[in-house]
Length: 161
Image (cartoon, rainbow, N blue to C red):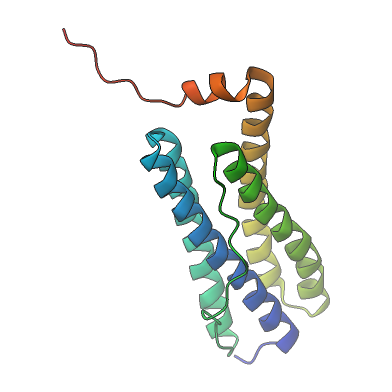
């Protein structure tokens, strides 16, 4: 099938965003694990994998529409040097997705590509959940204080019985 070039361009733009997020979340996950925050690292790794699924869906759609997925481009990674910086960096990348994807949904509908609009809406729902999670973590960090918040994320070894 031959798709609309504007829609394919939107898909590739979103693909770039997803590929960037995959790398950013994965690196943050590794840093968190290295700092001893293994539960948080698992959550960040899960987010990276979710972004991989988004990239896969977008790639499939681009190919279906007769386009070429651009895997050679990434946006700049925002690597946080603390958990708080990482949350802020991840929130920024998610908010940029919203700025890009919401108008993209409207464009897809205007062009008559309901399937791509629906795909973008599915991704949007996932990103909104992640934004909510990140905002909640930052709010909790502000309410509890950074040190108390972080102390709740440290896994304790099992007690010797």
